[in-house]
Amino acid sequence: MVCFRLFPVPGSGLVLVCLVLGAVQSYALELNLTDSGKATCLYAKWQMNFTVRYETTNKTYKTVTISDRGTVTYNGSICGDDQNGPKIAVQFGPGFSWIANFSKAASTYSIDSISFSYNTGDNTTFPDAEDKGIITVDELLAIKIPLNDLFRCNSLSTLEKNDVVQNYWDVLVQAFVQNGTVSTNEFLCDKDKTSTVAPTIHTTVPSPTTTPTPKEKPEAGTYSVNNGNDTCLLATMGLQLNITQDKVASVININPNTTHSTGSCRSHTALLRLNSSTIKYLDFVFAVKNENRFYLKEVNISMYLVNGSVFSIANNNLSYWDAPLGSSYMCNKEQTVSVSGAFQINTFDLRVQPFNVTQGKYSTAQDCSADDDNFLVPIAVGAALAGVLILVLLAYFIGLKHHHAGYEQF
Image (cartoon, rainbow, N blue to C red; front, top):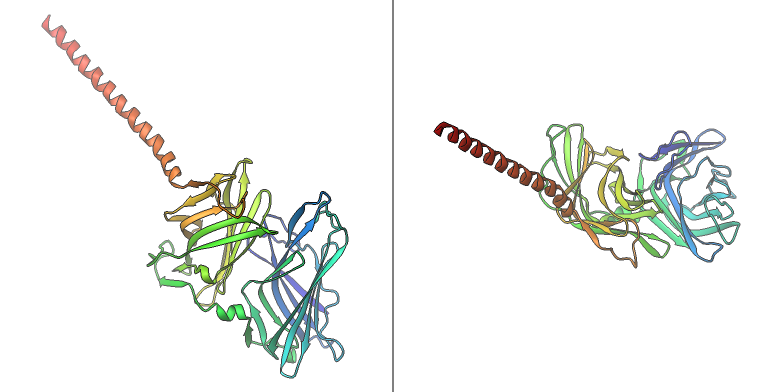
């Protein structure tokens, strides 16, 4: 028997298994596999997406990101026996499937391999594909985990092979569950173990509307997103998160040295996703407006706070970092992106280009100081007009006074 639930990531708009698509969405899968006695034998919860590069009928290449899985089934998932090890089998879409195989030794169990199959005959996902059919990519892992330990890997793990990039994060899995109870002992993946440099956190207890003053400027990091072999998104920025939860305000400087980036690029939307050992995901979603400008439209975040709680916020109705297509947006001074009353992002030394990146380099930048100049121009014009009006009125009153003086002489 297989039991599963679908958990939405903020901003994905998941209702049951129906998704309203935006840029790139993903939702967590959770599998609780039970044996004939209805005791849990395998537990798994994880997030994943896939990027596939394929050849088209006109001999060019396209790249697609597969994250909307629609209706998911788990046919073929088994607890394992003396002949066969446990297996997670996932089916979604027309001809798409994913399999993870496990095995057991004396004191450990292993995630042996992962197999991903995709169907280039699906014209919706792979329009104009030259070769039609189901293609399978196998990856050998051999990740060893102590028996009766729950494997955790919040960090992004990426597998690349044969034009396919597989991304996994927020992974929890335990095969060979003992006595039907998932273990509370966790075995961390290497990336989670090495992410020991924690963000700088300053905590005070002000009112919910008060943000503590940061003590230092965050280090600027450089992030990029690739579309096949080409860079399609560039971002350089220092990020400082202002979070208020339960009347406790925190300022968190993001350390770019322990932060990973992924994302996707489409014709009218682009996604930059950051994650680390404490940040499950921090999404920046860009959009095109009026076919000639881009802007930051959406920010989503889910992260662990120092008290162990999870902080999650999403806003898909923003309007920041506006610039013409074919250019980049730059702002060296501190700016604030207000996502909600409880969450703001301060940016430093910002430069971003989510569309039309050429040869992996930034295009000419529109500086945020131009916005200040555009704001000052109408003020200056208004002040000048007011000055002219005052002069006209003074001249009028002076002339009127002389006119009355002339009458008095008669």
